[in-house]
Amino acid sequence: MKKPIAAGLVLVACLAVAAGCGSKKETTAAPTPQPLELVLDFFPNADHAPLYSAISHGDFRAVGLDVQPQAPAEPAEPLKLLAAGRVDAAISYEPELLLARDQGLKLVSIGALVQRPLTSIIALPSKHVSKVADLARKRVGTAGIAYQKAELQTALQSAGVKPSSVREVNVGFNLIPAMLSGRVDATLGAYWNYEAIQLRLQGRHPNVIHVENAGVPPYDELVLVRDISFHTLCMHHLLPFFGQAHVAYLPGERILGISKLARVVETFARDLQLQERMTVQIADWLEQELRPRGVGVVLSAEHTCMTIRGVLKPGARTVTSALRGSLRDDPGTRQELFSLVG
Image: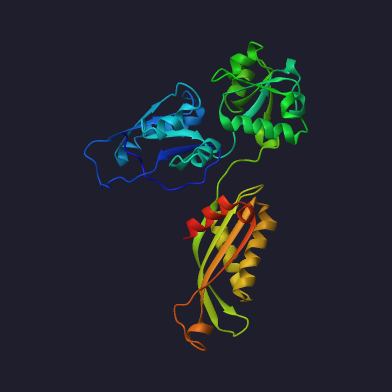
């Protein structure tokens, strides 16, 4: 059994490095680099440039790791190998990782190679596919990965096309050969920055539709900045209350630098405040300015009106929360937020 690698959660977009959960004895130095078998999502290509650059520059060896990349036999293999303990880490796609977690596999994301979706719908000009609606009554090749079927159905529904009118064909790694041979009319699964460029260099002039422009929301995970300290004055008693703010959002149309989340808290703390109002104000501002898929704000504070006067209860804390969008409506996402806030 391979040793799993414990790692922290990092914001990921299109490609997420996944590693098995578990514990590992920490050492400050290793006499020889420890082998780490890493299975790629595909054969080596430009998307793996950060990985191979780190290997070439000795960055992994500097921390005691001998990273050994290997290509998978088929697209759905990486997470299966990882879950079975046959490799130490894998490169996969964020939707695949989330599906694996739903199935009970104890996998965690530890880093991102690419920060935006690369998957595209690609077709040759002769097939006359310039928009998703043109896929009606056509054959679309995929790599047989579960999330690609979901993306195809989402794109079709967004375009008003009945999914039953489109035939999905599992062509494995052979996305481009299947399209060039006429086996399929279009593909979903090839990358706009790799296969599409190859076709252009061959003079094929492909039509390319990015999935995020086809009604498929970009897949990214929760952004949380916790333990943001704040001090303000209670408008009822003109006495201080102070504590920590935990601010989270699921990116939608825009993202915000993480330091700006702390500044938002600081801005609203400058007024005479009620904790309940301040919590709602922060959540409303993020929802209006970022148009995210979800917002979560939790404030935990000590009010001196309770500690130095009145009931005299030092250490008592008041906790308030404001949830918007999927952080309010989706139980799983809401649970993730509160588990991270602790």
